[in-house]
Image (tube, rainbow, N blue to C red; front, side, top):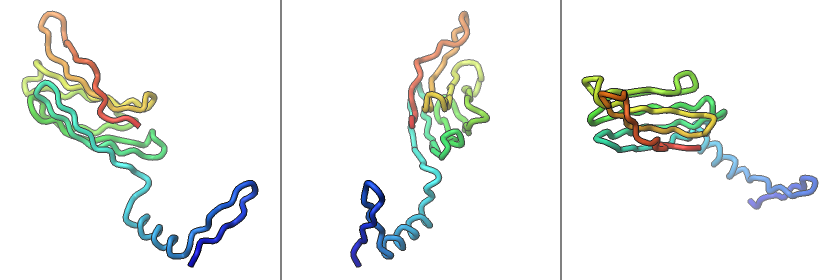
Length: 132
């Protein structure tokens, strides 16, 4: 069966065949088009971070979850209600991992901080884990 062309004012529209509509319905039943999972990995200073950023529509409903393994161990979940997290090494006083989701800037970023006993925390530059 061939596709039918329907006039749409100033442009023509190609109408889907029944077979194409059926294939689309089967695909939509298997794949959730409301969420696009974006995996990410980050390694710095003896810490590995891996996670999934779940991009949703609207983007403010998006979230991310992941784990840190290495000198810092922990898990996190960020969304519009909780946009930042700080994970610490087992002593709680030597290393800190900051992860931040910024909807206005459309990115997810992380940095490693180490304790400086005289000046507080000294942090690396921010690394982008995911952007949309």
